[in-house]
Image 1 (tube, rainbow, N blue to C red):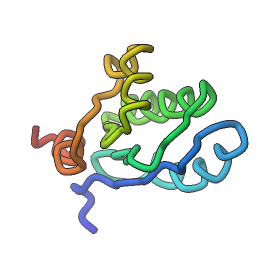
Image 2: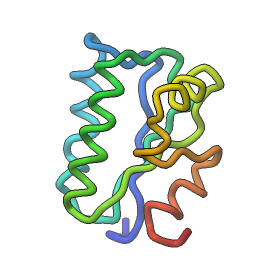
Image 3: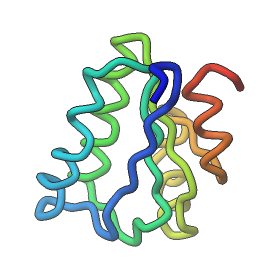
Image 4: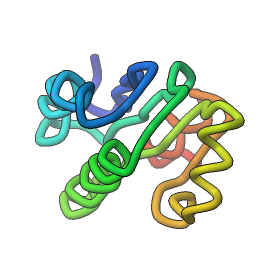
Length: 109
């Protein structure tokens, strides 16, 4: 895989205190890796609490400090409403399609 290609990672169905350790194991190797950044595919995500959202923001901040990006893609209607309600979309970009999110992370959009 090219170091210019965004990494796409799928969230679990639920992202909370109990599922966060396993999700971190998936994400962390890519946080300090080469490449433009990470796309988090939210399509399977039906529930996320403040712990899960906090970790997503934390990952975004860490990547931003490295000059890299995080984008959120394919949120369900419920998760999209939550993202908009708390203003997360002002901190991390949200896309309806994986391709658009990947292009954003790769600096092509």
